[in-house]
Length: 170
Image (cartoon, rainbow, N blue to C red; front, top):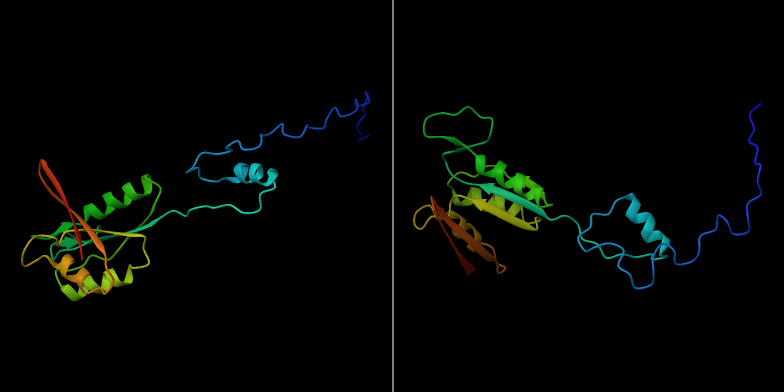
């Protein structure tokens, strides 16, 4: 029938693991930045540790601005371009372990930009593309200046073959 025959008697402590066999006191189980999976949690549980300090993935919002910018998938027309930057940046955020959130495309309108930024303040980081030229269409800086709390804004001025960065406190 359906039964198991054990032909040998186990020796005393034959299948008992010795204390400290899995890891030693003060050994590092996992490197900082390890993404915890089920096998990690099992090892952590074996230490008897009830609490861990962990970090969540950062949420990074991406805002493209400009009257000429179309949402990807919209019909391209004269003097319009799709928002390829937002998809590229979102992909980079995900490659580096973040959670990307593409915001609606903002027109060259101060209030529109401000409202979209305000709705994204729950993000850990907001990346903007466009709207930071010097002069009439420097709307990102103007929108940011409407927020009461102090913010750091780092801009990268990139032209073909040239990349310069500047940091401003607003």
